[in-house]
Length: 88
Image (cartoon, rainbow, N blue to C red; front, top):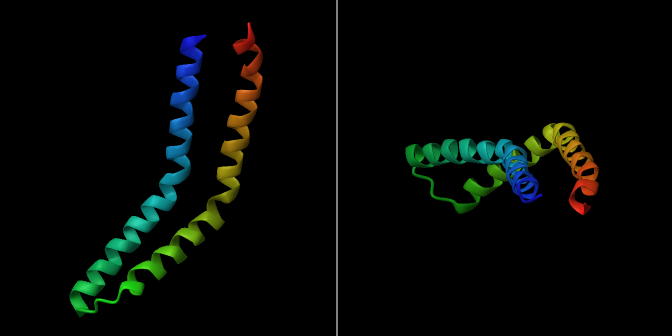
């Protein structure tokens, strides 16, 4: 029983990592591109770094939402099916 709970916790962390990775990578790449642009043009405007990242992350969320929902639904079904094994 204890090993099932630990496995469920590990699987939960993996799912959180898989779901957040596209947004984090998109924000990281856009931040790097904006930083390179700011360094080459010497424009140090703070909003210039936030607005493109927000747009990229929102776009990635819109395009990956079906995939994310399928992963969360599958995980939820798996957890619900495991409930009886935790009771006995």
